[in-house]
Image (cartoon, rainbow, N blue to C red; front, side, top):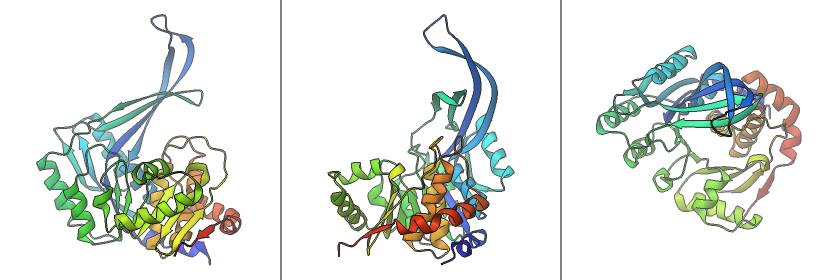
Length: 330
């Protein structure tokens, strides 16, 4: 199978990303002394950069891979919200579904970095549910857009509620791919794919962590919640790709890890485009694993581009494919 053939289909797809929009700020500086006021470093700031985060970073990943992308979420009527819109427009991501709120500020994560090391992260966020006015605008947009897939990107910042999820899942306009946080698992019933990380999966499944229990628990997790497919990310141990046939153990791409920020966003983006382009869950997960291995070599949440992915596939696909293991419990 020539995976490049499927990669070329990405540019023909349109995906709607709905979820929590975050602005990532990277503040770079030098540490040359300790504060006389407290035993903490003094950072002499030299440069700041602004990047799309959360659901907006998923949208950016999809766009970088060639897809047409629409984003739905909420930002504040503030400087940071304007920055989000500016970055969306720079990257040609449709922002008609982005609601500007006068009741909440834009979610911002500021990372202070010196000599390649993150010193501290400062979060500014509001996790309260959307007010009815905001919710009505979001629901109206979600019911209008015609797309090839919908991604639910939950960062637990207040965007999602059971009624918004219900409109997306039950609308069935397109396959729904879910990147969940800590709740709403029962409301995702009927989703085409749900992608928890291993920590979230263990918490929801309440399992013992020996290997066979994990495999069997993954099958129960898919069946009990009513998902068509599940992919569980496990960091440097790769992924588990679960369907009604069984469980595929997908290896990780071994690269030097510089920064894991945004790796999950890359995974859900590649899984979505790969599966709506015709790849099986096994091959889609393997492709996503390769993409994640590229992403973690970059600073911050950074997209993976088609050329990078094609080169890595040529180099790694065959040997990684040979390491895939299948567990059939039927």
